[in-house]
Image 1 (cartoon, one colour):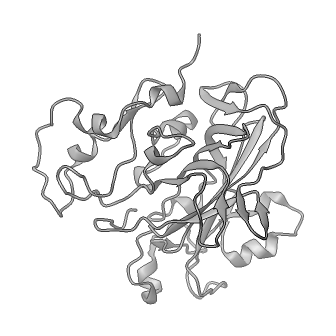
Image 2 (tube, rainbow, N blue to C red):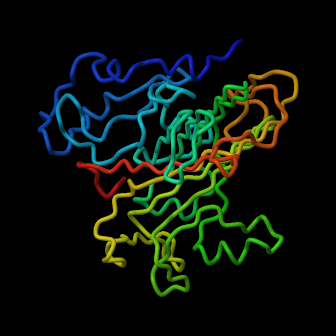
Length: 329
């Protein structure tokens, strides 16, 4: 039996999601205040399994003017690589794990975009990654949801999804110490800020994760970063919630919304054969996750151009801060 496509089923527009069915009875939304739960629950999209999942929405409801307390980054409908609404929670359900809704973030780059280094994007790409900074789960969980879409004018394309490997969490000091130790099993892929006085005092709150998703015929690598994480890690007790503002008073009140992403590099290992196939949540053959990889065998393609040369990844810094964002973002 032919499986449905993620891109064919995720077809509800945001307006359609908002106004599907009758408005439930419940608290009346008030502009400038937190939205009642039923307002948030209207933002849904149908996944490949026929179930409905929460999806992207603006931080302020455009109809009622109430706030959701979190944001999901760029509007995915603006992407030239994949303009459909992503079903937040579908991928991790395939893996049998939970991921808090607030942590799903979208990063859109369209061909021709210019970054803060003067580089021009040579391809269109979209990252949907689970990277929240309001909780402590990220300090211990290695695999996180990733949808990665890339479309280039020369025919290179990938549409990949799965639980990407982000390696271990640790400080930048630990990361640098382990870079050349010859043991890939202890690599730091989630470089986080640690509690002051625990051995790695730095002058920056910058937190960056590297996502790697290997589906056999392609490997997508993407990095997402935040300049204002809401919490920091206590190396002695990774389950302890430590608010950044409590230990770094100079940071004021971080909201985890000042972010950037590195799109690519992407590796193709599909010189011939099917361009559409299915894997499980971790990229192994079989399962329900639809993957699409063009027929290429290339270790990266040019993603960014400047007069001094080309790069196989494109960095894009675009904060999505604004009113109505709370401590769970």
